[in-house]
Every structure is written in C-alpha cells, then in structure tokens.
Length: 150
Length: 90
Image 1 (cartoon, each protein chain N blue to C red):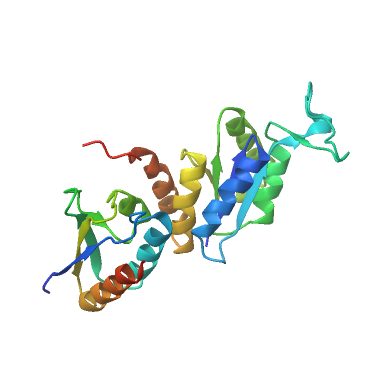
Image 2: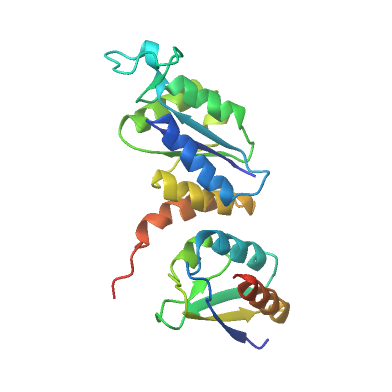
C-alpha cells in the first residue's frame, strides 16, 4: 500500500485534511501531515511565542520537515504528496532532492487540490491501488463540479 | 453472460455522501464483475462503482434513483451486496 504525505503552509490545515482523509481510509494506510515552520526560524514572524510560552509555528513550508515525513511513512510501493500552493511546491521539490535517488523515484507530487485530493487518494490507496492510479483519482476530483447546475 | 440490473433509491437526507461512497467502492471491489451505475434522476453518465472518483460524478441526492449494472460471474452476488448496503444507509 502506498503512503500519503499532506503538505500545507498551515499545520492545522494539513492535520485537518489528514483527519478527514482518515475517515475514508483503511487503518493500514499511513498518512503524514506537515505544515508551518518553526516560529523561531521564521523571519518577520508575527507569531513568536504563544501565550503559554511554547514556541509556535509560523505560516510556511519546510523541505526538511517534508523529507522527514516521507521517511516516516515510507512505502516501497510509493509515496504520494498532496500539497497546497505556491512555495509548498518548491519546498516539496526540494524535499525530494534531499532524499536518496531510490526513494525520490518512488515519490510523486500530485496536482490535486489538497483536501479533495487527500480524500480521494485515501480511498483509492486503501484499496491497494498503485501510485499512478491513486494519483489519477486524486487529480480527477478537480474536474468534477461540486454543485450540479443543470 | 447476462447483464443484471437493480434500481436503488437514495434515502439519506445527505444524499450519497462521502463515507457511503467509500463503502460502495469497498464492496464493489470485492467482486470480479464489472459494476457500473447511472443516476436515473439526473441522467448522469454511466460510472464505474469501483472508483470513488466516478461515484462522486453520480451527484446523488435524497430521493434520486440509481440503476446499478453488473456483468460477470459474480454479478448477482455483487448487486445483492450493494442493494443491502444501500438499504442499510439510514
């Protein structure tokens, strides 16, 4: 079974997408959620320390965190990466560059929208389908209208 | 091999929602038969019930009638299982 890595600029979005996708997934399916960057490393961060004094995450994506997530849920059948926007793409591409060649070749960055794609991918991956088939379902959801207008 | 069909009506107020869609895909994938469906109420295209993506295209709401088709050795068993599933959805 392939694994899924969900990447957002905001940690809570990635975690939320994971919660939703897990509703549709087999217990065996491994899903990692990655988002935000450590506030202490974020330039011009407006977040800094939270009221409780714990360090908080700023909005952004971190290639190292993404690479670690891929390694945590690694599957020899492949890892599908579902990402949000903009620099998430760059960070995810950089994350793949950080991986050994043999792992990178089994990773695929999806063009699917993050939330919808994660749900579709969770169902298809749970059925044991290949990386390419799972990604096709995830990307295909963008073509289906949400609201039926006759 | 004769194609078999059965009609089911969506009774859930939420329509054929995501979690039910997942169950339909899981049940359909347990059979070798080709299993397709069409939303008769909406005259939707024919879709493959083994794919969650295609099930989304049924856009089935409460009161809609779906016609299920199965073709293959275990077609009858597949339609029975799917009918039970649709009836068990509140």
